[in-house]
Amino acid sequence: MAVPQRPVERRLAAIMMTDIVGYSRLIGLDDVATLQAIDDLRRSVIDPAVLRHHGRIIKTIGDGLLVEFASVVDTVACAIAIQQGVATRYTERPDQPSLLLRIGINLGDVIVQDGDLFGEGVNVAARLERLSEPGGICLTREVRDQLQDRFNLSWADLGEQNLKNIARPVHVFGISPDVIAGLPKEAAGEIGTVEAQISSNARGFSALSPRLSLVVLPFMSASDAADQSHFAEGMTETLTTDLSRIRRSFVIAPSTARLYQDQQTDLQQVSRDLGVRYVLRGSIQKSGSRLRVNAQLLDSQTGAHIWSERFDGDSTDLFGLQDQITGRIANSLDREITVAALRDAEVRRMAPDAVDFLMRGIAASYGPQSLESVQRQEAFFRQAVTFDPGNSEALARLAWSILLQELPLQHSTSTEISQNRVKEAAEVARAGLMHDPDSARAHLALALVHRLHGDPKGMALESEAAVALDHNLANAHTSLAMALIWLGRPHEGLLAVEQAMRLDPRSPQFGVFLSVLGRAQLLLGNIEVAADCFAKAQLLPSSLPNVHAGTAMAYALLGDLEAARAAARQALDVAPRFRMSHSAYAPLAQSPDLYRKLYREVILPAAEQADLPV
Image 1 (cartoon, one colour):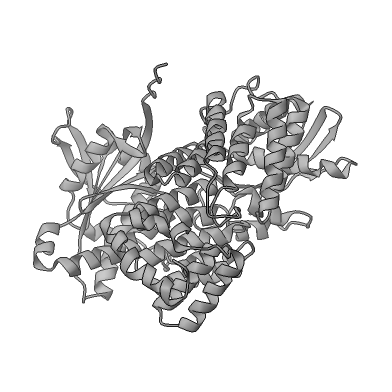
Image 2 (tube, rainbow, N blue to C red):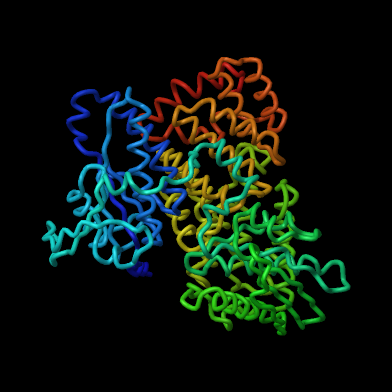
Protein backbone atom coordinates (compact mmCIF):
# COMPACT_ATOMS: atom_id res chain seq x y z
CA MET A 1 0.00 0.00 0.00
CA ALA A 2 1.42 3.39 -0.98
CA VAL A 3 2.34 5.65 1.91
CA PRO A 4 0.23 8.83 1.72
CA GLN A 5 2.20 12.02 1.33
CA ARG A 6 2.20 14.39 4.26
CA PRO A 7 0.22 17.55 3.50
CA VAL A 8 2.28 20.72 3.29
CA GLU A 9 2.23 22.46 6.67
CA ARG A 10 2.13 26.26 6.58
CA ARG A 11 1.92 28.81 9.34
CA LEU A 12 2.28 32.52 9.92
CA ALA A 13 5.51 33.30 11.75
CA ALA A 14 7.70 36.21 12.77
CA ILE A 15 11.18 35.48 11.41
CA MET A 16 14.48 36.98 12.54
CA MET A 17 17.70 36.55 10.55
CA THR A 18 21.08 37.59 11.94
CA ASP A 19 24.46 37.96 10.25
CA ILE A 20 27.94 38.91 11.45
CA VAL A 21 29.39 41.93 9.66
CA GLY A 22 32.73 41.21 7.96
CA TYR A 23 32.82 37.57 9.04
CA SER A 24 35.18 36.40 6.28
CA ARG A 25 37.63 39.23 7.01
CA LEU A 26 37.62 38.46 10.73
CA ILE A 27 38.22 34.76 10.08
CA GLY A 28 41.13 35.67 7.82
CA LEU A 29 42.69 37.83 10.54
CA ASP A 30 42.33 35.35 13.43
CA ASP A 31 40.05 32.38 12.95
CA VAL A 32 40.47 30.91 16.45
CA ALA A 33 39.79 34.19 18.29
CA THR A 34 36.84 34.96 16.02
CA LEU A 35 35.17 31.59 16.55
CA GLN A 36 35.72 31.85 20.30
CA ALA A 37 34.17 35.34 20.30
CA ILE A 38 31.14 34.09 18.34
CA ASP A 39 30.70 31.18 20.74
CA ASP A 40 30.94 33.56 23.71
CA LEU A 41 28.45 35.97 22.10
CA ARG A 42 25.89 33.23 21.54
CA ARG A 43 26.26 31.84 25.06
CA SER A 44 26.16 35.18 26.85
CA VAL A 45 23.91 37.38 24.68
CA ILE A 46 22.06 35.80 21.76
CA ASP A 47 20.79 32.49 23.11
CA PRO A 48 19.60 33.93 26.45
CA ALA A 49 17.78 36.75 24.61
CA VAL A 50 16.03 34.26 22.32
CA LEU A 51 15.00 32.21 25.36
CA ARG A 52 13.69 35.26 27.24
CA HIS A 53 11.53 36.29 24.30
CA HIS A 54 10.12 32.82 23.60
CA GLY A 55 11.91 32.33 20.29
CA ARG A 56 13.17 29.12 18.70
CA ILE A 57 16.50 28.87 16.89
CA ILE A 58 15.73 26.89 13.75
CA LYS A 59 19.29 26.60 12.44
CA THR A 60 22.60 28.31 11.82
CA ILE A 61 23.24 29.49 8.27
CA GLY A 62 26.95 30.12 7.87
CA ASP A 63 27.69 32.85 10.39
CA GLY A 64 24.01 33.73 10.85
CA LEU A 65 20.93 32.40 12.62
CA LEU A 66 17.34 31.74 11.57
CA VAL A 67 15.01 32.27 14.54
CA GLU A 68 11.22 31.85 14.71
CA PHE A 69 8.80 33.66 17.03
CA ALA A 70 5.04 33.52 17.52
CA SER A 71 4.88 37.26 18.26
CA VAL A 72 6.18 40.28 16.34
CA VAL A 73 6.56 42.17 19.62
CA ASP A 74 8.77 39.41 21.04
CA THR A 75 10.83 39.34 17.84
CA VAL A 76 11.63 43.04 17.85
CA ALA A 77 12.24 43.08 21.60
CA CYS A 78 14.68 40.20 21.17
CA ALA A 79 16.50 41.91 18.28
CA ILE A 80 16.87 45.11 20.31
CA ALA A 81 18.13 43.16 23.33
CA ILE A 82 20.69 41.35 21.17
CA GLN A 83 22.03 44.54 19.59
CA GLN A 84 22.22 46.25 22.99
CA GLY A 85 23.93 43.19 24.46
CA VAL A 86 26.47 43.02 21.64
CA ALA A 87 27.35 46.69 22.09
CA THR A 88 27.72 46.31 25.86
CA ARG A 89 29.67 43.07 25.57
CA TYR A 90 32.48 44.53 23.54
CA THR A 91 32.70 47.65 25.66
CA GLU A 92 33.31 45.32 28.61
CA ARG A 93 35.51 42.85 26.67
CA PRO A 94 37.97 44.86 24.54
CA ASP A 95 40.25 41.79 24.41
CA GLN A 96 37.86 40.02 22.02
CA PRO A 97 37.33 40.71 18.29
CA SER A 98 34.65 43.37 17.88
CA LEU A 99 31.62 41.69 16.31
CA LEU A 100 28.70 43.61 14.85
CA LEU A 101 25.41 42.10 13.77
CA ARG A 102 22.88 42.95 11.11
CA ILE A 103 19.32 41.80 11.80
CA GLY A 104 16.32 41.44 9.47
CA ILE A 105 12.75 40.78 10.64
CA ASN A 106 9.73 39.73 8.59
CA LEU A 107 6.20 38.56 9.30
CA GLY A 108 5.05 36.09 6.70
CA ASP A 109 3.87 32.68 5.61
CA VAL A 110 6.38 29.84 6.02
CA ILE A 111 6.46 26.16 5.10
CA VAL A 112 7.33 23.76 7.92
CA GLN A 113 9.22 20.61 6.93
CA ASP A 114 11.28 18.28 9.11
CA GLY A 115 11.75 20.93 11.78
CA ASP A 116 13.02 23.53 9.28
CA LEU A 117 11.34 26.60 7.79
CA PHE A 118 11.20 27.55 4.12
CA GLY A 119 9.39 29.95 1.83
CA GLU A 120 9.17 33.62 1.03
CA GLY A 121 8.64 34.58 4.69
CA VAL A 122 12.17 33.33 5.41
CA ASN A 123 13.70 34.69 2.20
CA VAL A 124 12.45 38.23 2.81
CA ALA A 125 13.98 38.26 6.31
CA ALA A 126 17.31 37.11 4.85
CA ARG A 127 17.29 39.91 2.27
CA LEU A 128 16.33 42.53 4.88
CA GLU A 129 19.26 41.57 7.10
CA ARG A 130 21.63 42.58 4.28
CA LEU A 131 20.01 46.03 4.08
CA SER A 132 20.52 46.69 7.78
CA GLU A 133 23.21 48.97 9.16
CA PRO A 134 25.88 47.20 11.24
CA GLY A 135 24.38 47.15 14.73
CA GLY A 136 20.92 47.97 13.37
CA ILE A 137 17.66 46.27 12.41
CA CYS A 138 15.57 46.24 9.22
CA LEU A 139 11.95 45.14 9.14
CA THR A 140 8.94 45.18 6.84
CA ARG A 141 5.92 47.47 6.96
CA GLU A 142 3.82 44.51 8.18
CA VAL A 143 6.07 44.19 11.22
CA ARG A 144 6.04 47.90 11.92
CA ASP A 145 2.24 48.05 11.64
CA GLN A 146 1.88 45.21 14.15
CA LEU A 147 4.12 47.01 16.64
CA GLN A 148 2.07 50.21 16.57
CA ASP A 149 3.61 52.48 19.28
CA ARG A 150 4.87 49.77 21.65
CA PHE A 151 8.57 50.67 21.60
CA ASN A 152 8.35 54.42 20.93
CA LEU A 153 10.91 53.99 18.14
CA SER A 154 12.21 56.45 15.58
CA TRP A 155 11.90 54.67 12.26
CA ALA A 156 13.93 55.31 9.14
CA ASP A 157 11.56 54.85 6.19
CA LEU A 158 13.67 53.17 3.50
CA GLY A 159 10.76 53.02 1.05
CA GLU A 160 9.96 50.27 -1.45
CA GLN A 161 12.91 47.95 -2.01
CA ASN A 162 13.40 45.42 -4.80
CA LEU A 163 14.88 42.41 -3.04
CA LYS A 164 16.76 39.66 -4.85
CA ASN A 165 14.49 36.78 -5.96
CA ILE A 166 11.44 38.39 -4.33
CA ALA A 167 8.74 39.04 -6.94
CA ARG A 168 7.18 42.13 -5.35
CA PRO A 169 8.72 45.29 -3.91
CA VAL A 170 8.89 45.29 -0.10
CA HIS A 171 8.39 48.43 2.02
CA VAL A 172 11.29 48.51 4.50
CA PHE A 173 11.91 50.39 7.73
CA GLY A 174 15.19 50.63 9.62
CA ILE A 175 16.19 51.11 13.25
CA SER A 176 19.65 52.62 13.56
CA PRO A 177 22.27 51.66 16.17
CA ASP A 178 21.95 55.12 17.72
CA VAL A 179 18.21 54.69 18.23
CA ILE A 180 18.76 51.22 19.76
CA ALA A 181 21.44 52.56 22.09
CA GLY A 182 19.01 55.19 23.41
CA LEU A 183 16.34 52.65 24.37
CA PRO A 184 16.02 51.39 27.98
CA LYS A 185 18.11 48.30 28.65
CA GLU A 186 16.51 45.02 29.74
CA ALA A 187 16.91 43.93 33.34
CA ALA A 188 20.46 42.87 34.09
CA GLY A 189 21.34 39.22 34.36
CA GLU A 190 22.03 36.41 31.95
CA ILE A 191 19.02 34.15 31.99
CA GLY A 192 20.98 31.64 29.96
CA THR A 193 23.34 30.74 32.79
CA VAL A 194 22.45 27.83 34.99
CA GLU A 195 22.84 29.93 38.12
CA ALA A 196 20.21 32.39 36.96
CA GLN A 197 17.98 29.61 35.71
CA ILE A 198 18.05 27.68 38.96
CA SER A 199 17.62 30.74 41.16
CA SER A 200 14.72 31.88 39.01
CA ASN A 201 12.85 28.76 40.07
CA ALA A 202 12.67 30.25 43.55
CA ARG A 203 11.75 33.77 42.59
CA GLY A 204 9.31 32.97 39.79
CA PHE A 205 9.14 34.02 36.18
CA SER A 206 6.63 36.86 36.39
CA ALA A 207 8.73 39.28 34.40
CA LEU A 208 9.32 36.75 31.63
CA SER A 209 5.95 35.06 31.19
CA PRO A 210 3.67 35.81 28.24
CA ARG A 211 0.38 37.55 28.86
CA LEU A 212 -1.62 34.32 28.69
CA SER A 213 0.16 32.36 31.42
CA LEU A 214 -1.82 29.84 33.42
CA VAL A 215 -1.58 27.09 36.02
CA VAL A 216 -4.26 24.48 36.58
CA LEU A 217 -4.17 23.69 40.30
CA PRO A 218 -5.07 20.10 41.21
CA PHE A 219 -8.82 19.65 41.10
CA MET A 220 -10.15 18.35 44.39
CA SER A 221 -12.22 15.19 44.52
CA ALA A 222 -15.60 15.89 46.10
CA SER A 223 -16.52 12.20 45.98
CA ASP A 224 -16.91 10.21 49.19
CA ALA A 225 -14.95 7.36 47.60
CA ALA A 226 -11.29 7.81 48.43
CA ASP A 227 -10.22 5.84 45.35
CA GLN A 228 -11.80 8.46 43.07
CA SER A 229 -8.99 10.97 43.74
CA HIS A 230 -7.13 9.59 40.73
CA PHE A 231 -10.04 10.75 38.59
CA ALA A 232 -9.56 14.35 39.71
CA GLU A 233 -5.80 14.09 39.12
CA GLY A 234 -6.33 12.75 35.61
CA MET A 235 -8.86 15.48 34.88
CA THR A 236 -6.31 18.09 35.97
CA GLU A 237 -3.62 16.75 33.66
CA THR A 238 -5.77 16.25 30.58
CA LEU A 239 -7.38 19.66 31.03
CA THR A 240 -3.87 21.17 31.27
CA THR A 241 -2.99 19.48 27.98
CA ASP A 242 -6.04 20.96 26.26
CA LEU A 243 -5.36 24.44 27.62
CA SER A 244 -1.78 24.30 26.33
CA ARG A 245 -3.28 24.19 22.85
CA ILE A 246 -4.49 27.77 23.18
CA ARG A 247 -2.41 29.89 20.87
CA ARG A 248 0.39 31.88 22.57
CA SER A 249 -0.31 30.26 25.93
CA PHE A 250 2.21 29.33 28.61
CA VAL A 251 0.82 26.58 30.83
CA ILE A 252 2.64 25.17 33.86
CA ALA A 253 3.11 21.38 33.85
CA PRO A 254 0.84 19.30 36.13
CA SER A 255 3.76 17.83 38.09
CA THR A 256 4.70 21.32 39.28
CA ALA A 257 1.08 22.32 39.89
CA ARG A 258 0.61 19.29 42.16
CA LEU A 259 2.88 20.85 44.77
CA TYR A 260 0.03 23.26 45.57
CA GLN A 261 -2.37 20.43 46.42
CA ASP A 262 -3.88 20.12 49.91
CA GLN A 263 -2.93 23.60 51.02
CA GLN A 264 -4.57 26.98 51.35
CA THR A 265 -3.11 28.53 48.24
CA ASP A 266 -2.01 32.16 48.28
CA LEU A 267 -2.67 33.26 44.70
CA GLN A 268 -0.05 35.99 44.75
CA GLN A 269 2.50 33.45 46.00
CA VAL A 270 1.56 31.17 43.10
CA SER A 271 2.10 34.10 40.74
CA ARG A 272 5.53 34.81 42.25
CA ASP A 273 6.56 31.16 42.33
CA LEU A 274 5.47 30.19 38.84
CA GLY A 275 5.29 33.47 36.95
CA VAL A 276 1.68 33.03 35.89
CA ARG A 277 -1.16 35.52 35.60
CA TYR A 278 -4.15 33.18 35.83
CA VAL A 279 -5.08 30.28 38.10
CA LEU A 280 -7.73 27.67 37.35
CA ARG A 281 -8.96 25.58 40.27
CA GLY A 282 -11.99 23.51 41.03
CA SER A 283 -13.48 20.23 42.11
CA ILE A 284 -14.86 17.15 40.45
CA GLN A 285 -17.55 14.81 41.73
CA LYS A 286 -18.28 11.46 40.13
CA SER A 287 -21.38 9.47 40.98
CA GLY A 288 -21.76 6.39 38.84
CA SER A 289 -21.35 7.62 35.28
CA ARG A 290 -22.41 11.18 36.15
CA LEU A 291 -19.84 13.96 36.50
CA ARG A 292 -20.06 17.42 38.01
CA VAL A 293 -17.13 19.81 37.56
CA ASN A 294 -16.97 23.12 39.41
CA ALA A 295 -14.30 25.45 38.05
CA GLN A 296 -13.06 28.94 38.95
CA LEU A 297 -10.73 31.11 36.92
CA LEU A 298 -8.91 33.76 38.98
CA ASP A 299 -6.48 36.59 38.32
CA SER A 300 -3.55 35.70 40.59
CA GLN A 301 -2.26 39.27 40.72
CA THR A 302 -5.52 40.89 41.84
CA GLY A 303 -7.42 37.94 43.29
CA ALA A 304 -10.40 38.82 41.10
CA HIS A 305 -12.79 36.04 40.02
CA ILE A 306 -12.94 36.15 36.24
CA TRP A 307 -15.62 33.51 36.17
CA SER A 308 -16.90 30.47 38.00
CA GLU A 309 -19.11 27.85 36.48
CA ARG A 310 -20.55 24.37 36.98
CA PHE A 311 -20.40 21.75 34.25
CA ASP A 312 -22.54 18.60 34.37
CA GLY A 313 -22.12 15.64 32.08
CA ASP A 314 -21.49 11.96 31.65
CA SER A 315 -18.13 10.26 32.23
CA THR A 316 -18.43 8.74 28.76
CA ASP A 317 -18.08 12.30 27.45
CA LEU A 318 -15.35 13.51 29.79
CA PHE A 319 -13.49 15.27 27.01
CA GLY A 320 -16.62 17.05 25.90
CA LEU A 321 -16.69 18.66 29.35
CA GLN A 322 -13.01 19.57 29.01
CA ASP A 323 -13.72 21.22 25.66
CA GLN A 324 -16.45 23.33 27.26
CA ILE A 325 -14.15 24.45 30.07
CA THR A 326 -11.23 25.14 27.72
CA GLY A 327 -13.34 27.18 25.31
CA ARG A 328 -14.91 29.11 28.20
CA ILE A 329 -11.46 30.08 29.52
CA ALA A 330 -10.27 31.09 26.07
CA ASN A 331 -13.26 33.37 25.58
CA SER A 332 -12.92 34.83 29.07
CA LEU A 333 -9.27 35.76 28.64
CA ASP A 334 -9.28 37.10 25.10
CA ARG A 335 -11.98 36.87 22.44
CA GLU A 336 -9.33 36.67 19.73
CA ILE A 337 -7.61 33.66 21.29
CA THR A 338 -8.77 30.39 19.78
CA VAL A 339 -8.17 26.81 20.76
CA ALA A 340 -5.89 25.41 18.05
CA ALA A 341 -7.02 21.82 18.14
CA LEU A 342 -10.08 20.95 20.20
CA ARG A 343 -10.78 17.48 18.91
CA ASP A 344 -14.24 16.37 17.86
CA ALA A 345 -16.26 15.39 20.92
CA GLU A 346 -17.67 12.30 19.25
CA VAL A 347 -14.17 11.02 18.42
CA ARG A 348 -13.12 11.52 22.03
CA ARG A 349 -16.03 9.68 23.68
CA MET A 350 -14.75 6.87 25.88
CA ALA A 351 -16.23 3.98 27.79
CA PRO A 352 -16.44 4.72 31.52
CA ASP A 353 -14.03 1.89 32.37
CA ALA A 354 -11.51 3.22 29.84
CA VAL A 355 -11.69 6.65 31.47
CA ASP A 356 -11.15 5.12 34.89
CA PHE A 357 -8.05 3.14 33.89
CA LEU A 358 -6.61 6.06 31.90
CA MET A 359 -6.93 8.33 34.93
CA ARG A 360 -5.37 5.71 37.19
CA GLY A 361 -2.41 5.42 34.84
CA ILE A 362 -1.95 9.18 34.72
CA ALA A 363 -2.11 9.39 38.52
CA ALA A 364 0.55 6.65 38.73
CA SER A 365 2.84 8.71 36.50
CA TYR A 366 3.18 11.43 39.15
CA GLY A 367 6.20 11.45 41.40
CA PRO A 368 9.60 9.75 41.07
CA GLN A 369 9.61 7.07 38.40
CA SER A 370 10.78 3.62 39.46
CA LEU A 371 10.57 0.40 37.47
CA GLU A 372 7.58 -0.64 39.59
CA SER A 373 5.67 2.61 39.06
CA VAL A 374 6.24 2.48 35.29
CA GLN A 375 5.07 -1.15 35.17
CA ARG A 376 1.94 -0.10 37.07
CA GLN A 377 1.30 2.65 34.52
CA GLU A 378 1.65 0.16 31.66
CA ALA A 379 -0.91 -2.16 33.27
CA PHE A 380 -3.46 0.67 33.68
CA PHE A 381 -2.99 1.99 30.13
CA ARG A 382 -3.29 -1.54 28.69
CA GLN A 383 -6.62 -1.90 30.49
CA ALA A 384 -7.78 1.46 29.09
CA VAL A 385 -6.87 0.36 25.55
CA THR A 386 -8.66 -2.98 26.11
CA PHE A 387 -11.89 -1.12 26.85
CA ASP A 388 -11.35 1.55 24.18
CA PRO A 389 -8.86 0.42 21.46
CA GLY A 390 -9.18 3.71 19.59
CA ASN A 391 -8.30 6.05 22.44
CA SER A 392 -5.24 7.99 21.28
CA GLU A 393 -4.34 9.29 24.74
CA ALA A 394 -4.23 5.81 26.25
CA LEU A 395 -2.30 4.45 23.24
CA ALA A 396 0.36 7.19 23.42
CA ARG A 397 0.82 6.78 27.16
CA LEU A 398 0.96 2.98 26.85
CA ALA A 399 3.74 3.27 24.25
CA TRP A 400 5.67 5.68 26.50
CA SER A 401 5.38 3.41 29.55
CA ILE A 402 6.66 0.41 27.56
CA LEU A 403 9.64 2.35 26.23
CA LEU A 404 10.64 3.79 29.61
CA GLN A 405 11.23 0.25 30.81
CA GLU A 406 13.64 -0.36 27.94
CA LEU A 407 15.93 2.58 28.61
CA PRO A 408 19.29 0.98 29.44
CA LEU A 409 20.50 1.78 32.96
CA GLN A 410 17.40 3.81 33.77
CA HIS A 411 14.35 1.65 34.51
CA SER A 412 15.80 -1.47 32.92
CA THR A 413 17.66 -4.11 34.88
CA SER A 414 20.18 -4.70 32.10
CA THR A 415 22.04 -2.86 29.37
CA GLU A 416 20.20 -4.79 26.65
CA ILE A 417 17.08 -3.59 24.85
CA SER A 418 14.15 -5.86 24.02
CA GLN A 419 13.62 -5.10 20.33
CA ASN A 420 10.23 -6.83 20.40
CA ARG A 421 9.03 -4.48 23.14
CA VAL A 422 10.34 -1.44 21.26
CA LYS A 423 8.61 -2.66 18.09
CA GLU A 424 5.35 -3.10 20.00
CA ALA A 425 5.61 0.40 21.46
CA ALA A 426 6.25 1.90 18.01
CA GLU A 427 3.15 0.16 16.63
CA VAL A 428 1.06 1.36 19.57
CA ALA A 429 2.26 4.97 19.13
CA ARG A 430 1.51 4.89 15.39
CA ALA A 431 -1.96 3.53 16.16
CA GLY A 432 -2.42 6.53 18.43
CA LEU A 433 -1.48 8.86 15.56
CA MET A 434 -3.93 7.10 13.25
CA HIS A 435 -6.74 7.98 15.66
CA ASP A 436 -5.38 11.45 16.45
CA PRO A 437 -2.72 12.87 14.08
CA ASP A 438 -2.27 15.80 16.51
CA SER A 439 -1.18 13.64 19.47
CA ALA A 440 1.99 15.24 20.81
CA ARG A 441 2.52 12.35 23.22
CA ALA A 442 2.45 9.79 20.39
CA HIS A 443 5.17 11.75 18.58
CA LEU A 444 7.12 11.92 21.85
CA ALA A 445 6.91 8.13 22.18
CA LEU A 446 8.20 7.74 18.61
CA ALA A 447 11.09 10.06 19.49
CA LEU A 448 12.03 7.62 22.25
CA VAL A 449 11.81 4.75 19.73
CA HIS A 450 14.37 6.58 17.57
CA ARG A 451 16.55 7.16 20.64
CA LEU A 452 16.58 3.44 21.40
CA HIS A 453 17.38 2.69 17.75
CA GLY A 454 20.35 5.07 17.82
CA ASP A 455 18.77 7.55 15.38
CA PRO A 456 19.27 11.13 16.63
CA LYS A 457 17.83 12.74 13.48
CA GLY A 458 14.61 10.76 13.78
CA MET A 459 14.50 11.57 17.50
CA ALA A 460 14.90 15.27 16.77
CA LEU A 461 12.16 15.27 14.10
CA GLU A 462 9.62 13.50 16.29
CA SER A 463 10.52 15.72 19.27
CA GLU A 464 10.07 18.81 17.07
CA ALA A 465 6.66 17.51 16.03
CA ALA A 466 5.67 17.00 19.67
CA VAL A 467 6.81 20.53 20.59
CA ALA A 468 4.94 22.01 17.62
CA LEU A 469 1.73 20.25 18.65
CA ASP A 470 2.05 20.99 22.37
CA HIS A 471 4.61 23.68 23.15
CA ASN A 472 3.91 23.29 26.88
CA LEU A 473 4.94 19.61 27.06
CA ALA A 474 8.17 19.80 29.07
CA ASN A 475 9.25 16.24 28.26
CA ALA A 476 9.10 17.05 24.54
CA HIS A 477 11.56 19.93 25.00
CA THR A 478 13.86 17.66 27.03
CA SER A 479 13.69 14.97 24.34
CA LEU A 480 14.54 17.59 21.72
CA ALA A 481 17.46 18.80 23.85
CA MET A 482 18.87 15.26 24.10
CA ALA A 483 18.63 14.81 20.33
CA LEU A 484 20.28 18.16 19.59
CA ILE A 485 23.15 17.43 21.97
CA TRP A 486 23.57 14.03 20.32
CA LEU A 487 23.71 15.78 16.92
CA GLY A 488 26.49 18.07 18.14
CA ARG A 489 24.26 21.14 18.59
CA PRO A 490 24.66 21.81 22.32
CA HIS A 491 23.77 25.52 22.07
CA GLU A 492 20.30 24.64 20.79
CA GLY A 493 20.03 21.71 23.19
CA LEU A 494 20.73 24.06 26.08
CA LEU A 495 17.88 26.35 25.00
CA ALA A 496 15.48 23.44 24.66
CA VAL A 497 16.16 21.98 28.10
CA GLU A 498 16.00 25.44 29.71
CA GLN A 499 12.52 25.80 28.25
CA ALA A 500 11.57 22.47 29.82
CA MET A 501 12.90 23.72 33.17
CA ARG A 502 10.85 26.87 32.87
CA LEU A 503 7.67 24.99 31.97
CA ASP A 504 8.00 22.52 34.84
CA PRO A 505 10.27 24.04 37.51
CA ARG A 506 8.98 21.73 40.27
CA SER A 507 8.99 18.54 38.20
CA PRO A 508 9.90 15.31 40.01
CA GLN A 509 12.08 14.74 36.94
CA PHE A 510 13.93 18.04 37.40
CA GLY A 511 17.11 16.06 38.05
CA VAL A 512 16.88 14.72 34.50
CA PHE A 513 16.53 18.28 33.18
CA LEU A 514 19.64 19.33 35.11
CA SER A 515 21.54 16.30 33.86
CA VAL A 516 20.74 17.15 30.23
CA LEU A 517 21.70 20.77 30.88
CA GLY A 518 24.96 19.53 32.40
CA ARG A 519 25.69 17.49 29.28
CA ALA A 520 25.18 20.54 27.08
CA GLN A 521 27.45 22.66 29.29
CA LEU A 522 30.08 19.89 29.27
CA LEU A 523 30.18 19.95 25.46
CA LEU A 524 30.36 23.75 25.46
CA GLY A 525 33.46 23.58 27.66
CA ASN A 526 31.76 25.13 30.70
CA ILE A 527 33.09 22.49 33.07
CA GLU A 528 32.40 24.31 36.35
CA VAL A 529 28.84 25.10 35.31
CA ALA A 530 28.35 21.47 34.20
CA ALA A 531 29.65 20.23 37.56
CA ASP A 532 27.20 22.56 39.32
CA CYS A 533 24.31 21.17 37.24
CA PHE A 534 25.21 17.57 38.05
CA ALA A 535 25.78 18.33 41.73
CA LYS A 536 22.31 19.93 41.98
CA ALA A 537 20.78 16.97 40.13
CA GLN A 538 22.30 14.55 42.65
CA LEU A 539 20.43 16.26 45.47
CA LEU A 540 17.05 15.63 43.85
CA PRO A 541 14.90 12.46 43.94
CA SER A 542 15.30 9.85 41.19
CA SER A 543 18.97 10.59 40.67
CA LEU A 544 19.97 8.29 37.80
CA PRO A 545 23.38 6.73 37.10
CA ASN A 546 24.00 9.11 34.19
CA VAL A 547 23.73 12.02 36.66
CA HIS A 548 26.37 10.54 38.97
CA ALA A 549 28.56 9.73 35.95
CA GLY A 550 28.34 13.32 34.72
CA THR A 551 29.33 14.56 38.16
CA ALA A 552 32.27 12.16 38.23
CA MET A 553 33.58 13.30 34.85
CA ALA A 554 33.11 17.00 35.62
CA TYR A 555 35.06 16.71 38.88
CA ALA A 556 37.77 14.70 37.14
CA LEU A 557 38.14 17.47 34.56
CA LEU A 558 38.37 20.00 37.40
CA GLY A 559 41.14 17.92 38.99
CA ASP A 560 39.19 16.79 42.05
CA LEU A 561 39.71 13.02 41.72
CA GLU A 562 38.45 12.22 45.22
CA ALA A 563 35.05 13.79 44.49
CA ALA A 564 35.08 12.24 41.01
CA ARG A 565 35.58 8.72 42.31
CA ALA A 566 32.97 9.19 45.03
CA ALA A 567 30.42 10.15 42.34
CA ALA A 568 31.50 7.17 40.21
CA ARG A 569 30.86 4.84 43.16
CA GLN A 570 27.37 6.32 43.47
CA ALA A 571 26.72 5.59 39.78
CA LEU A 572 27.75 1.97 40.27
CA ASP A 573 25.70 1.66 43.46
CA VAL A 574 22.60 2.71 41.50
CA ALA A 575 23.45 0.62 38.42
CA PRO A 576 26.15 -2.04 39.00
CA ARG A 577 26.24 -2.81 35.26
CA PHE A 578 26.94 0.82 34.31
CA ARG A 579 29.26 1.23 31.31
CA MET A 580 30.06 4.42 29.42
CA SER A 581 29.38 2.50 26.21
CA HIS A 582 25.71 2.14 27.27
CA SER A 583 25.30 5.53 28.93
CA ALA A 584 23.71 8.77 27.79
CA TYR A 585 27.20 9.95 26.77
CA ALA A 586 27.90 7.11 24.32
CA PRO A 587 25.89 8.66 21.43
CA LEU A 588 28.46 11.48 21.35
CA ALA A 589 30.76 8.99 19.63
CA GLN A 590 28.42 9.34 16.62
CA SER A 591 28.28 13.15 16.75
CA PRO A 592 30.02 15.55 14.34
CA ASP A 593 33.82 15.45 14.30
CA LEU A 594 34.33 18.18 16.92
CA TYR A 595 32.23 16.41 19.56
CA ARG A 596 33.34 12.91 18.59
CA LYS A 597 36.89 14.09 19.22
CA LEU A 598 35.82 15.70 22.51
CA TYR A 599 34.24 12.42 23.60
CA ARG A 600 37.33 10.42 22.69
CA GLU A 601 39.97 12.82 23.98
CA VAL A 602 38.24 14.52 26.94
CA ILE A 603 35.14 12.72 28.22
CA LEU A 604 36.37 9.11 28.08
CA PRO A 605 39.73 9.91 29.72
CA ALA A 606 37.84 11.80 32.45
CA ALA A 607 35.61 8.75 32.98
CA GLU A 608 38.68 6.52 33.28
CA GLN A 609 40.27 8.90 35.80
CA ALA A 610 37.08 8.71 37.86
CA ASP A 611 37.18 4.87 37.69
CA LEU A 612 33.99 4.64 35.65
CA PRO A 613 33.85 1.44 33.53
CA VAL A 614 34.04 2.37 29.86
